[in-house]
Length: 170
Image 1 (spheres, rainbow, N blue to C red):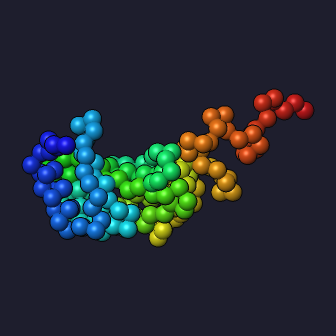
Image 2 (cartoon, helix red, strand yellow; image 1 turned 180 degrees about the vertical axis):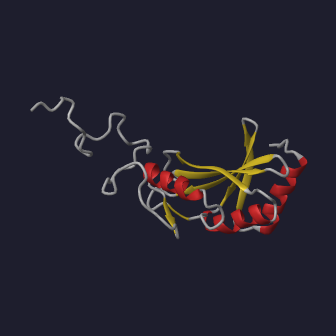
Image 3 (cartoon, rainbow, N blue to C red; image 1 turned 30 degrees about the horizontal axis):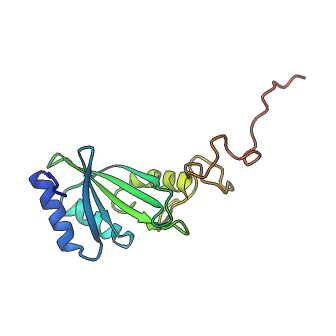
């Protein structure tokens, strides 16, 4: 498949594949965006390199994806922007269904803290070395992850105490 990358994006992809031969899996394009798939063990080093050497200083988003497959079920995608080059890049890491774990990138981008907590809260991906790792939407003792594809659309009856639908009258 021939990719139509801008010169700066092509240089970025080339540098990533050269500097991280064990961590670089591949690159593809979809809907005009460029996605670089890397190994989970390389996430911190690749992100440091992208920020410090290639000027992808802005972390726009981190989001989870449930591919609902038997191998590499979960993906975590990092949406990075180089303001200098006016380019954006998505890093993707695939994780197993059992015990999906990644190292936190909050030491690189402080804004990653809330985004990583959201991915954990909704998908169950654990981020090691996170400075404040706790749930952000659901109660701390909630044992489910609502954005997983097997989660029922109407929720799990009785899993969260809901307020009464009738007004209190005294």
